[in-house]
Image (cartoon, rainbow, N blue to C red; front, side, top):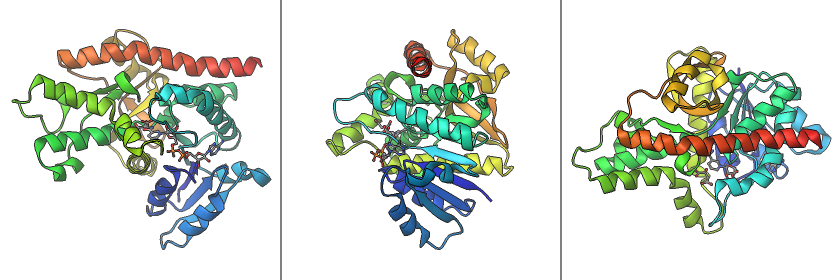
Length: 335
Ligand SMILES: NC(=O)c1ccc[n+]([C@@H]2O[C@H](COP(=O)([O-])OP(=O)(O)OC[C@H]3O[C@@H](n4cnc5c(N)ncnc54)[C@H](O)[C@@H]3O)[C@@H](O)[C@H]2O)c1
Ligand SMILES: O=C(O)C[C@H](O)C(=O)O
C-alpha cells in the first residue's frame, strides 16, 4: 500500500507523471493537487484499470490537506516553466513562494513523507523545503530529494546516440552529479557503464558534455514559448519515484543520483567534501536508497582532469544557489 501525491498535477509534467504513477501497481492511492483542473485529471485517470484509487483536489475546502493526508511519497512539479532566453534562476521569484507554501503544508500534514522536488531552480528549491521543515522541527535529511534524473536520462540517451545504438540507452548508466542547472550539471562520462569510443575527438566530448548540461535549453527552444521539458521529465520523475517506492518496500541495492542534503549521511558527506575541496550543504551524487530514504551518499570516485574541472566550476555556483534558497526562507520568516 503506497499513497503517492503530485502537487502541480494538472500541469505539463504533472499530468503525464500522474499517468505513470497510476500505471504502477505498487501505487494504491494517488492524490492529485493543483490550483486548477485537478478534478478533471483525477476523473480521467480514475477510469484506468490499475489498483490506485485516484483523488483530485483544488485549494477550496482545504484540498491541499486532504491530498496530503496519509501521503508517503510526494512529487512537486508545481510552478512556472522557462521560456526562451530565461535561466532556471529566473523562475526563482515565482517558484520559491509556491514551493515554500507547499512545503509548509507538507510539514503540517505529512512530515514523514518522502519529498521529491522537481520545481526549478532545484538547486535552490530543495534548500527552501529543508529550511521550512527545519522551522517546523520536522526536517529529516534522508527524506528530501531534488530530482536530477532527467540529466541522467539525457546522458544515457546521448551516449547511446554516439555509440550508434539507441536500444542501448536503457542499459547505459552515466552518473551525473552536482546540481540541476547549466554548469552545475556534471556528467561523469569516464564512469559510464558503456565507455565512449576512444577515438572520440575532444571537441565531440566537449559538445556531449555541453548537450547534457544544456539539454533543457534544447527543449525550451524547440517549444518556442510553450514551456520546457514535460514528457521526458515525467518519465524521469516516475523512474526516480519508483526507485524510492521500491526501496521503501524493502528492495535493497537501489542507487541513483539525487540532489540531497549532505546531513543525510555525514560519513559519506565527509568523503565527498574532501573530493569537492569545499563544504556544500547540498550536492547530487549517487545515493543508495533504503526503507528510510537516503542510506548512503557515495563519493565521486576517480575523475579525469576534464571532470575535475567541471566539478570545480560547479561548486561555487551551487554554493550561491543554495544560499539563495536559505536566505529566501530566512527573509520570509522576518516579514
Ligand atoms: N527537475 C527537473 O529536471 C525539471 C524538468 C522539467 C521542468 N522542471 C520544472 O518543473 C516545473 C513545472 O513545469 P511544467 O512544465 O509542468 O509547468 P506547467 O506550467 O505546465 O505546470 C505547472 C503546474 O503547477 C500548478 N501550480 C502553480 N502554482 C501552484 C500551487 N501553488 N500549488 C499547486 N500547483 C500549482 C499550475 O497550475 C500548473 O498546472 C517548472 O518549475 C519547471 O522548470 C523541472
Ligand atoms: O530546462 C528547464 O527549464 C526544465 C528542466 O530543468 C530541464 O532540464 O529540462
